[in-house]
Structures are given as C-alpha cells and as structure tokens.
Length: 227
Image 1 (tube, helix red, strand yellow):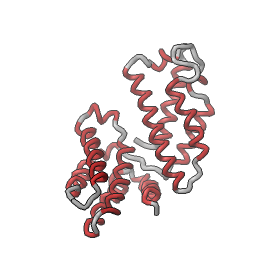
Image 2 (cartoon, helix red, strand yellow):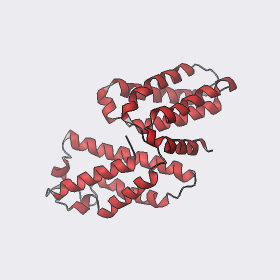
Image 3 (cartoon, one colour):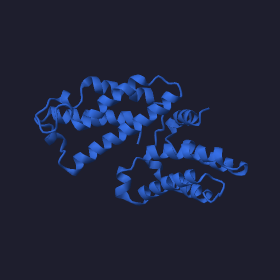
Image 4 (cartoon, one colour):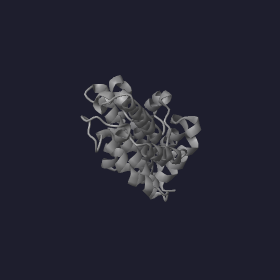
C-alpha cells in the first residue's frame, strides 16, 4: 500500500467514472455484490488510516485542520449520502470534483510524511516479528504493552499466512503501529534491551519501506517518537 489519500482518490475517481456511465449508483458500484462491499470496506479502511495520520501530524505541529474538517465529507461518499444507493444519481452525488481535488491535495501533503509500504517487501516482516516475539519474554515489560505487541504480531502473522486475510489486511497501518510499539518497548525496556527494540524500529524504516520513501518514513518515525 502507498499513500492512503492517493489510493482513496483513485478509488473515488473510479466510482465517479462508473456512475457517469450508468443511471443507478447501486448498479454502477455493485453494492449488492461482495466485490462492491469490499470496495466500501476498503474506503473506510483508508479513511481510518488517513484520520490516524492526520492526528499524529497535527500533534507534531503540522497544519492539518482543513483536512480534518474535510474528512467528514469524504466519509459520506461510501454511504452515498445524501442521495442514497437506490436512487438514480449524478456523479456529483457520489464524489464531487471539489472533494476529489481536496483528497488529491492531501495526497500531495502526505508525500514524504508517511510510510509508503512496498507490498513486495511483505516477507521481510516475518523475520522482524519473529525477532520481536523472542524479545517478549522480558518480565520487566509492562504486561499491557507486551499483550498489545503480541496481538499485533499475531494479526500480521495471520495475514502473511492466510492469503484471503492478507488480501484485505492493511499492512501499512500495521507496520506503523508496529514501529510505534517497538519504540514504546524501547523506552520501557531495561537498559540492556533498549537497543534491541530500537534496532527493530529502525529496521522497519530502512528495510521494509520502498527506497524512495525512506526519508519520509524517518520523518514520521521522528514525529511518532516525539523527537
């Protein structure tokens, strides 16, 4: 997965194009079929990722309020509000050109600030989470943090092992959460184990994101770390 706003823009643009060629929104987007519902779930997944990224960037001092205000409008698109799925609707009832321009502007803003996870590097996650799993035997770690990391590792491992699950799993979001969790573990770990957790957080940026996004990944890593 790349820039979530870029992907949302492409998805909404494709919906608008389909409606331009059809007289009924429901038929155009096949909302009664599993494929259509999967696209709606995908849209909400992307919206959730964008919301989380904007919160992190806002806390770091970036000016994101305009995008956060627009997010509610973008979130109405998969619900086909206010036109409704059953009615004949114009393309503007699905996604207006202004909304598409807003999302495209956000995609440009996020470039270089968010991890651009390369799906070709998925297998690189396996040794990383295996190593993290081996470090979770530390009795000094906060049980809540240890439990959270274990759950996240389990989610990623399941998605890697099960093709059906992996097809819909948001690896970019999981990698971001994993990175922040590793940094939290580094801060909480005994002195002798801090470096091991920090090394894992660094490996996410250097080894698991596409080459062109390494600098952007490091930028968001710094934001998440509060440095």
